[in-house]
Amino acid sequence: MQNARALDERLRKIIREVSDSTGQEIKRDLTEELARVIHENRMRQTRDFLESFKQALKKI
Image (tube, rainbow, N blue to C red; front, top):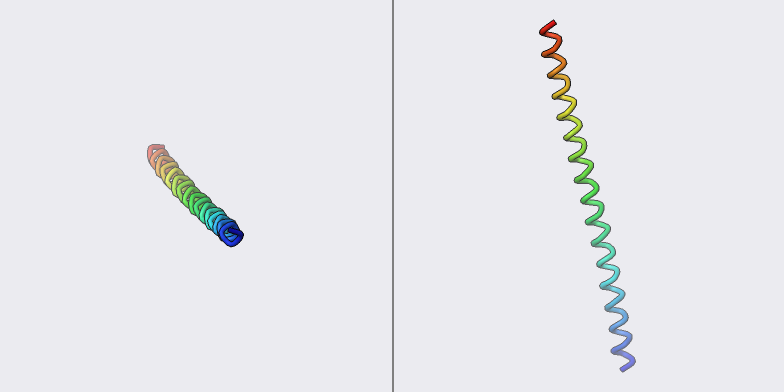
């Protein structure tokens, strides 16, 4: 009975550690993906602004 409790506790600890590790990996991946999307959006907005600015200069 003592062995079963010890084994149960060890398994719970392992599951908790794996869960924490996986959660951290998911958070890191989501953060990296968000940063990439924000960067791409900024680049697209900058490109669009510069194109509009170029067209406005041509009209002058």
